[in-house]
Length: 136
Image: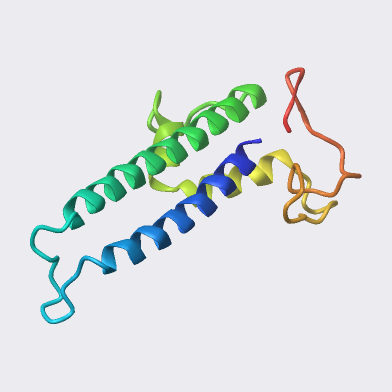
């Protein structure tokens, strides 16, 4: 499910960031606080930035495609930014967009949310159907 993908990406990014932060600290001169000349600091830093950027773009893409699918299956028209509303929402308001999708695809008034389950709901909760496709 897209939720699991984003959760896995977030956990991986947190671990990655911690590892690279500690790695980069080893190449900083304690007296000046600047990178040690001749060290691979800038190479490691560049790889970290490139990877972080790629992770961010992929997360936006997953949110964009999921929102687009839910909106099309539910027959919800775009109201603003015609043609790129899903992309704009995923890019500028990713957290809010994920919450909006969660509210739209589950009955949280009836079934309490459940952390680390397949769908974010208890196993007993029915799956919502959109145009013949089951949202899981």
